[in-house]
Image (cartoon, rainbow, N blue to C red; front, top):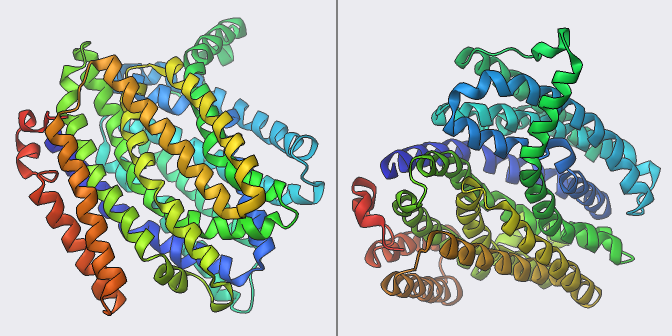
Length: 494
């Protein structure tokens, strides 16, 4: 399983590296630099509103479906028609409820609703695509799913890139959002057609032409099963997406500060691609392993390997961004937007990447184990902590305060997930492994301080040097070990 995981992970990361960074830094960043700060800040805050209420559109069906189809592939023809109808109904609910909450509860104006409506449409299409892909990965077509994971961004490079090329003098965030809609429509269609070729199933449930009472009973049973997954999504969305919304709502000039937070969040969002890719691969793999081994011993080698890999990647990248925050700011933003304030937000927010990556790994395992109720209790505490920290820090420190709130909350949730995993599976981290992981942090911090802060080299040369030193440190401290891929027993040290 370790070898299969690494092969698919390399394939997945390679495909996404060829596409997604070009959209994030070539397209999205260009739009931010071309429009006014308050206009992009408003777009960013509304985008987070669409993310915050995405549970209405998904209701946990994606993770529920991924886990169960991974364990029981023959259930796809039975589940798909009912889940597809539920997805359509939930999308309609999402379009109805979210604007009302945005206006009546969150204080947005009706003038903001056209843009929010397009963003909701994009999110609904994205959730439908993820649901379709969950069937693909559940059936074991990991590499095809890996290709499909970047198809939307590839199409956005074409649609949004064409918009920027045709509008050299200016561009609106509304037009930018509509170009994303076009890309999502094509992506959803392609994924659906490919899924139909890989599996035989009916689109509409049989009860459409029979007894509707039977259909309602089936739908109610599926919704009841997916409810714990829905709560996970709702609570996770709340504590991960509240920062930008609170920042924009609390401060009189909140939209401008939200734009600063958005610029920093872009780097974190791009990096989070790696953590999400780990999770997307691990959830069906963990589910299959736990089906045959209730004790959880079978997942230990894969868990150990994935934690050590993600530790090298996340610590190496986040520490580099922290030390290189001024250089990255000057590369990302136009000269009129350069400031120490913006650079510090970039550097500190990127440190959140480490706990977020750990959450992806341990969250996938706990989800596969269906320990969702316990997870949800910690998420509720995380939301309370997020609100408290933002209300305390944002009035004084603006976007930097929101950054510290994010870092504190994500660290708390990551530690909670690790503790839950240790309790559930009776895993005890090896002292030797913990020492090597701590030593790696010291190695990376010292290397970045010397190369980035003290040496007067070209930035590209510095970046390449830090990359080589980071990999070398992982190899010397035995966090990157080819033997762990070939032999699963050698990986079981965490």
